[in-house]
Image (cartoon, rainbow, N blue to C red; front, side):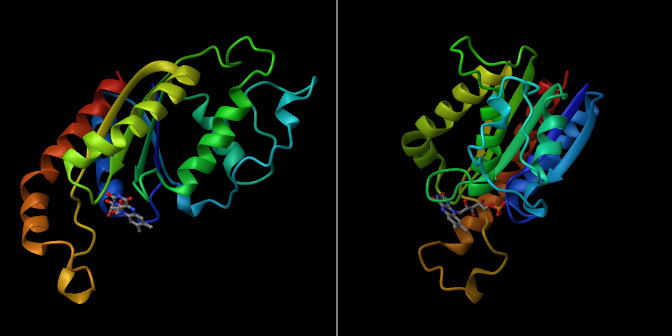
Length: 211
Ligand SMILES: Cc1cc2nc3c(=O)[nH]c(=O)nc-3n(C[C@H](O)[C@H](O)[C@H](O)COP(=O)(O)O)c2cc1C
């Protein structure tokens, strides 16, 4: 069992990374071999629509663009589970998440109208972190999250799970920033009470998808 874990946050040790490291602990606890990747370390772009992956002679489910992402896509497509974590930026996952999505899904897509080329099964975990409170995730971002889960799940054809951590701690010391819309005490209390539960949910996601 191989589980790929991808951090689509530019910050390597903050909320999203911590959630993904909890998922890694869950996956390893379930006996999986895990590869953890910080996406922002890689040099890559979104799909250039070169259509090399659609040429008659092309190997299917292969992105031909020559940058750091194509070898990662090869490894994702050989894995049994894929767990991607992203902060929410303006109501969506990050631009790097989106670039990965374009490249990964487009090379799996058949333009012959007969469903995705990919015939294997990769379990999918999506982990989101955000400033917004849980109610706002439920009311304003759930459709986005469910849409991504459904679209990606249709390509990857495995089990899917989503975990969202809301009202995250964005900085250690709010007094050093112009961030008056956040109540530092409330953030700290939420971080102490709720975030450990979010980490536990991420760990469980990692374990369940890696069985
Ligand atoms: C450019 C940018 C845009 C953001 N947009 C949103 C947003 O639309 N909704 C939200 O709830 N939080 C937003 N946030 C806050 C982050 O989603 C939140 O702090 C997240 O937990 C950060 O993850 P990290 O700690 O892994 O970097 C934004 C942060 C940045 C830097």
